[in-house]
Length: 84
Image (cartoon, rainbow, N blue to C red; front, side):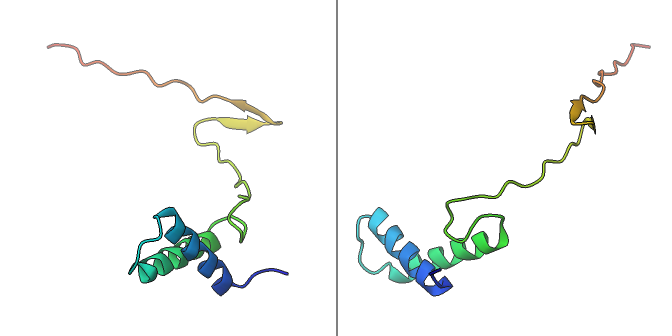
C-alpha cells in the first residue's frame, strides 16, 4: 500500500531529527524541511519514495544527432584583433 503524502512527510521529518542528533525544539523546522522536500519531489521526475529518479531526455545543444550518432558541433575559434 502506498503511503500518503502526510506519512511521507512525517517519516522524513523524523529522519531529519535523527540525523541532527535528536535536538529539542526543532520539530517545526524538520516538518517544514520535509514538506519542502516532498514538494520538490512532486515537481521533479523522482518517484514518491525519493529513491528512483526517472531519467529525463537529454537535449543536444551543441551537436546534431543522426541515426543515434552524435556529431560534435564545429569548434569555435577565437578571433584576434590586429594592432593598427
